[in-house]
Image 1 (tube, one colour):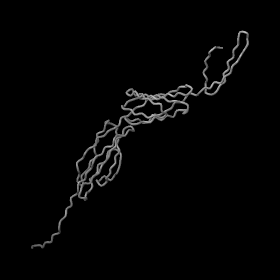
Image 2 (cartoon, helix red, strand yellow; image 1 turned 60 degrees about the vertical axis):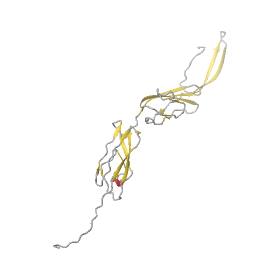
Image 3 (tube, one colour; image 1 turned 30 degrees about the vertical axis):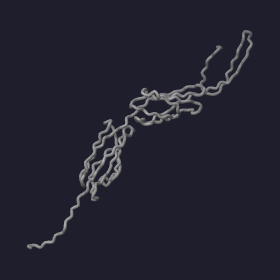
Image 4 (cartoon, rainbow, N blue to C red; image 1 turned 180 degrees about the vertical axis):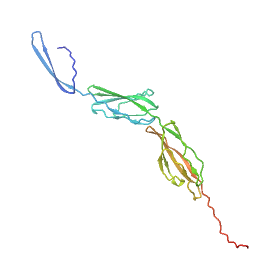
Length: 231
């Protein structure tokens, strides 16, 4: 009975609204119109495993995907340009920490929905590898000691490019094992390069390499000697 009423539709669709006016003489007039109610967007997105300095893609699974616009805010107070209007944007964080990411979706009819999540930007691990001296045949090549940063929970994978150094494995995880230097009759140094990649919480650091040098193995030769007893 209000002149300018309000009403909340419980679902989307097309509805018929009728306005009936009755004057003081009890005469009535009616007008009918169609009202189209849009559905609010269902906002859904996931954050990838975000590593410091990596170009991360945000996977937007919101619906619908037509007749809508997107407004992202990546919560990076250090960057005034931490926004995007793309459906599946990328963003690179320059510092570790916790960030609040917001996605707002607006339909062409003006319906607005949003979602906010909190994500953690993880550090990129680094590792310092040793530079061992050259080895002789049969020397013990000890398992190396790495210096990681951060200094806890860093794991490693490694690749050995030359099994002739005495390490038969060509790859492995954790720290390369202790092994015995191989024999070297080539007359020149044998060079093997072991490349180590640090990882932490799904973030991989820059691979670092160190050399294993096996020096030539000396060859002992002698001539047979004939002798006579009591000569």
